[in-house]
Length: 158
Image (spheres, rainbow, N blue to C red):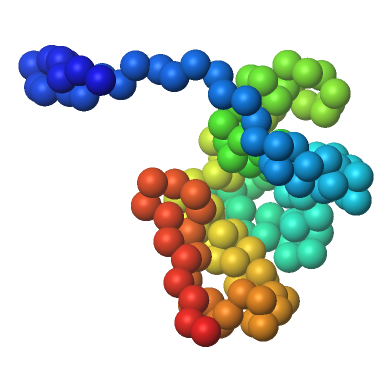
């Protein structure tokens, strides 16, 4: 560790540590989870959450009219949200070619449908649906929740 200057300000630099071995118990836990449930695709989780809650309905267009069918829009919005949420970006989602949507079409959907108000409304719908079905015996009675950003919070009382 050393104190250095970065942009004229003091900065703490921590030397990277070498790769550590995975703890034996963690290996066992991962193996048991894989044995019981297999691998779950994050895009599938997003898709199932949308099917259960219809949070995509909260994404309204800023354009005066839109000609996409609901199914095409749903698929493209899920791809855009997956790219943004997984920090992959739209380009990487589109470049695989497996999803049948070009980068340009996904960027257009992001431009027309994804904004702060729509995201907040969709997240509100998703969180409320999650709170409605959770088992309070395990999770308590939550009143607020946020994603795993630096300012994340979830409050529960039990």
